[in-house]
Image 1 (cartoon, rainbow, N blue to C red):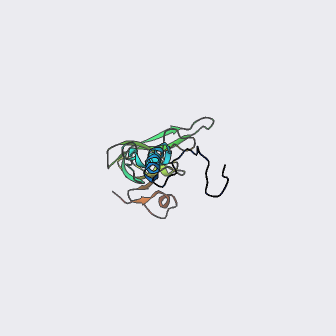
Image 2: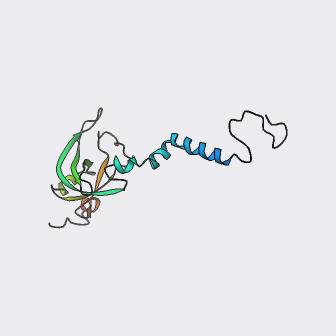
Image 3: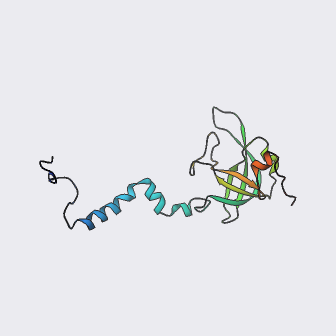
Length: 154
């Protein structure tokens, strides 16, 4: 309860003195680790755990084409590729969007892979797939799909 302006009743739970700045700062520094976003940004696990190593896109070499069955109640085979990332050699599964786009991708092609839009979570009914294919041998998959460009002969 405050009786007059500027007066605060005892038991507010935080130091309020003129010399309290250091105490406030150190307590805040410790408490910030309880915040999920702060911890994620400052622990450094995004460099270790994330296959991309903290970056937004990554290039990889296609190892094989795979079909992943959709989760219940849907029934479909989602077309994906297994790719090995060039920067660190990690193997990941990446979804190939749009109808028939798997035909533009061959084994040993270089593909550009991006996240799937949920910051490291699988999307929709595709279990365990956190990435999608954006480009194939330097050409956008959407341009190939719309027949704006052709895939270069390698």
